[in-house]
Length: 201
View 1 (cartoon, rainbow, N blue to C red):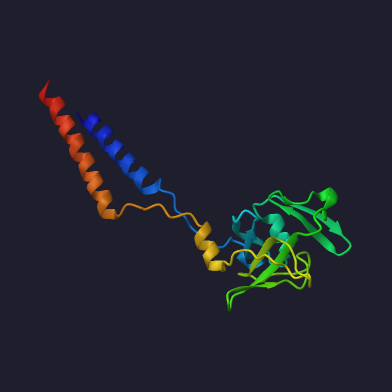
View 2: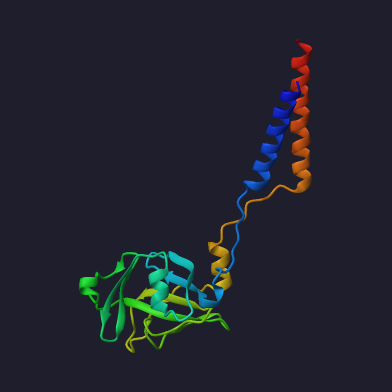
């Protein structure tokens, strides 16, 4: 009987440990080497109206092109005398062998002005600009007007909005009182089963 009681108690403890320790914790934090890295928000507007949102962790000295290379996108680029050219993102654009195949569209590049918030067209290339920690960089497949200004912009998202949109919802963790009730219930069931078996002997 004592051996059976020990086995039942062990099962109860194992189940409680499963509930207490097996629940994943969703933690949105900075990496351990936060002093040498930064986080940059990335917004890519696609022609079909969809967008790619991501918080990308890169070295402090990384350029926006480095952010694109580290992001979870399919990036095709070509090295030119003026720096890297963005040919296509997620299969929208041109192949690397003919990066400027579309004479009427290109990947317009923007910085987010948080005071608006509004997009500001970048005055430099993605391969030379170094965004700050917490900055948001945007790209849109765009045409251009008579003054060669882009006619399309990506949807506006602040850094905080990107974090909220891309962070998984935390899994609820049972409160201690719930765990106690569960343990008591299991113990009661185990005791009932043990008494029933003892009575039939």
